[in-house]
Each structure stands twice: as C-alpha cells, then as structure tokens.
Length: 313
Ligand SMILES: Cc1ncc(COP(=O)(O)O)c(C=O)c1O
Image (tube, rainbow, N blue to C red; front, side, top):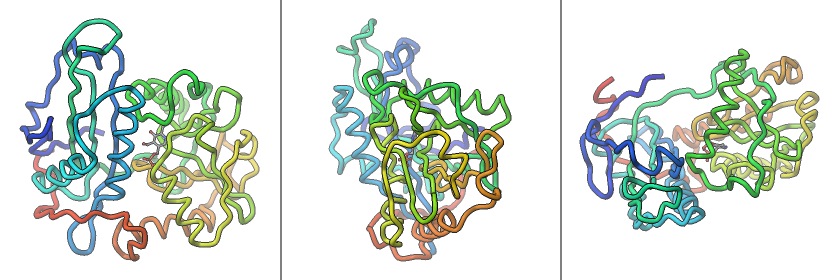
C-alpha cells in the first residue's frame, strides 16, 4: 500500500516538511537495524478525533529504548505532547502514527557509541492491515520467533522485524494473509505483527510474554475487555494443534485491531464464521475507539483536528 504523505514530520523537537525527513546512508540503523519504534492509531470520534492509548505506546517506546541502552532525551510527557502536536498540525484523522528513534550518522562499527539518537514521529492515513473481510486465512510459518536469549521480544525494535518479514513474505507467497510463528520450543508465539488469541468453550487463551511475543497494547486492551465481560482468560503456553480444534481464533494489534481468523493451514476454524466471543470483543473494542461506547478505561486522548483528509497522496 503506497504511503499517503502528510505535510509535517516531527524531528528532534521540531516540525519539518515531509520531504526533508531524510537520513544518511551511513547511519548506524541502516546497517545494524538499531531502531525502536511504535505504531498507534488516532480514531475519528463523533466529535473530533482521539488517540488510542497514547501514553502506553510512548512508554513502550521508552522501554524498548532502555532495553537497547538508547537515551532518547525526551520524557513521556514530551513524547505524548509531540504526537498531539503533529496530528493537530497535519489535520489528518483517522490516521496511523509511527514514532521511531534510531542510531544515526556518527561512527562506523557495530558498537553504536558515538552515533546520535534521532527521534522522528510521522502520521498518515492507513486502513485495514490483515486482508480478508470474512476472516483471515493464515498458516503456521516455517520460521520460528527468536529465542528469548537472542533478540528481546519485549522491545519493539526494527531488527526484530527481519524475522517478521520472513514470516509475512512466506505466508503471502503461499497465498495466506498472515503467518503464525512458533517459539524456539515449538509452542505458539504470535503473528508477524499481531498477538494471538484462541477460544475454546467459554475460555479465552493467549500466549504469555515468555513465548517470544511483543507485549501488545491491543492484547492488553482485549484482555481487559474480556475480564470486564466476565470471560475467563488464561495466559499459558499453547501447542500448535489447539488452533485446529479451537472454536474461535483471532489476532490483535494496532494495525490488525481485532481480526478474526477463518482458517489455519487450510483447516477451517469451526465452521469458518466469526464466533460470538470474537464478535463481542470486537464490538466492545471498536465501540470504544469509535466513541459509540464510553471510554471506561481512559484509553482515549482527544486531539483537535480541523481537516479530515490527507494533504497529499
Ligand atoms: C510482533 C508484534 N506482535 C504484536 C503486535 C501487537 O501489538 P500492539 O497491540 O501493541 O500494536 C505487534 C504490533 O505492534 C507486533 O509487531
């Protein structure tokens, strides 16, 4: 999907024109994958627009940076304010927001000492991520997620997405919308960019953080909504075959939101239709983000967006 441009990008504290946001080919990040980033959504509301779980996302950016000993030089409050400033300046909602911090141009060599840390925040319109309106057809990937003592999964770091690219490209080439990876011990982990949920009977299961998954903010939101609805939620290691006998399976993620899964490895999930628990959770989730249900958990940060259309295409 081509990127729809906006007028401004936030860079190290200032708004700069979209086309001026460029990096040198010798930047550390291009050679060694040394970036940490976020992805968040700003939704249209009946009145204006609102960012979903802004502070949680920006805290995760700071956490990812901390894991990689990267000092961003900004507080959580400053980063939150920067996202709001950018969205309001660009006047685009709904939109996706991509903050990214990386090791820039400085020295050569793997050790990033001596390379400045640059922070950019970009926003642009972005729609559905996992294809398949009637539920996604997915496969188990031949690629595993990285072992816990290799690439830290709790850091949302650029380098981790080399693994995600392998999973996603393989799925795509074989005619699937997405791939689900196993962890290094053969237990279910997650999709290339989504957390995984399984429903059996009236219980929801999801894979724990120790199975090499990103600590998803949508995952946390769905767990919160499920508990509020009185549904039992269990986080535990899951074997692959539970997918083939599940009543419902779905993905969560900022990009994927709540995406029902219709089949895995060409085996239909139940009868192939979106199940009642997935449906109920999706309704709760979309109700809150679209403003038709109360924001009981203070997940939304209102923004003042004048225009509702992108500046360029
Ligand atoms: C590998 C991976 N897992 C899970 C998720 C879902 O996380 P979140 O709900 O915070 O977007 C993402 C998306 O950021 C991801 O890239």
